[in-house]
Length: 232
Length: 232
DNA sequence: GTGGTTTTCGCCTCGTGGTCGAAAACATGC
DNA sequence: GCATGTTTTCGACCACGAGGCGAAAACCAC
Image (cartoon, rainbow over all chains, first blue to last red; front, side):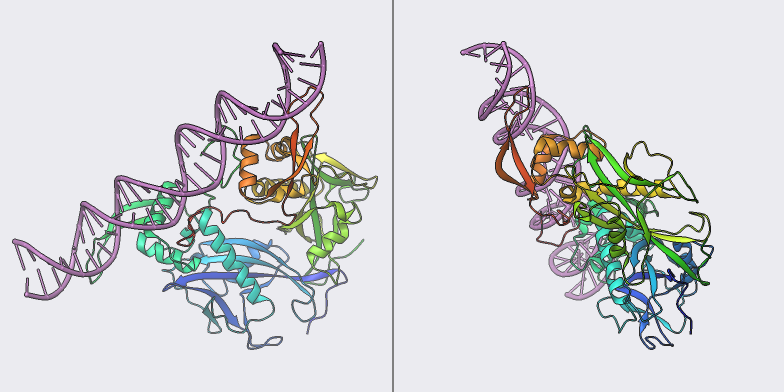
């Protein structure tokens, strides 16, 4: 059992809310704790901040123990969780991250680790349930005004497939017409020139698209109060 | 001289980028370090995270040593700065906050503390210059799609005064016509019914306004991909 | 009153996005 | 082969938000 740190120092953890959408269901990667405290409950991947790394490097290092990092298409910082009573003593401060895995990736995970639908979380350890909800909220917000969908979608996809991904992540129906227009007008979606074969019941073959960039981009100097001469 | 913490624990600091606009110049509150390291350089207010407080409570506590907290109209978390070499050993991890002070407030500050225009920062300690720029960027972004102006403006003001505040914060000219229309349509600006006397060269007396809320509100379900039936 | 100044308001335009329906391109069954 | 059904794609329509501009309103000084 470890003791508290030197007076005025605290253990610093990094945590990752890794989200992935499969079959129109957004899920988060959790592992089941074997040891106290909170043995048996489900926790976010993460671990201690090491002495020679910043928090982002740290979360990538810890994540690599649970999934193939190459499958995680995007990582960003969510914030600090520091309630003195967020867990049993000794006190721990955590920096949480959001990670996204494309829907066509199916990374191998350890035996204690599994994907859980975010709408039906198991009993979570510490404040990890609240942190997960923060991550889902962040994803939902950014889908609207960034190209963050690149981190959820396969490399190539049809508009209908992308529509289903967005609908699952946002939690409401999405019009394929509108999604296609909005994303192409913003320049984040480019056609590959290929088409996908129709389903068993026929239908026009769907054109394949991909995201023009695989780095996060705010697609809009969004909202109002732009510089003069920059009417949108 | 303090030693490093127990292995795997780190001193955790909180820092505040406190911004205020006076005379069309955005400034940040800095204090001049008297002791090494970085003696003589200017640093952000802040200090150590205490054992019985979360980071937000901590930053408010430390801020209270520099300014009257009642004058700080808004505080929000910016993020974690954790580069192992962001300062000399022993390593410190910092959670940065953005704080905003209305332009009509002129809180008393200690003798080692002063406002510095953000476009002409003095030599700053550690990574506090970069953190300050992060704070300014956050303010600029949020001016567009939230009511965050309430934390920069006096309780009552004219549209022209508010226009000057926004122009100073955004760094470009702002149309009073458009600002008035955008903010009133969003319902964040309400007329007080009073008027301000014209200046020495005459002119129509300006109507006074105030912000309808003094809590941060995202005024827009901003950008695209709203639920069906929710056309704006 | 006349001219100058500042604020306020209405009108115009453009871009964005939600909605709808028609057309395109496939499959299946008769 | 042709009619029917299915899915995708595309264009048309509309509402609204926001930038630009100019006129009108309301003051001052002379």
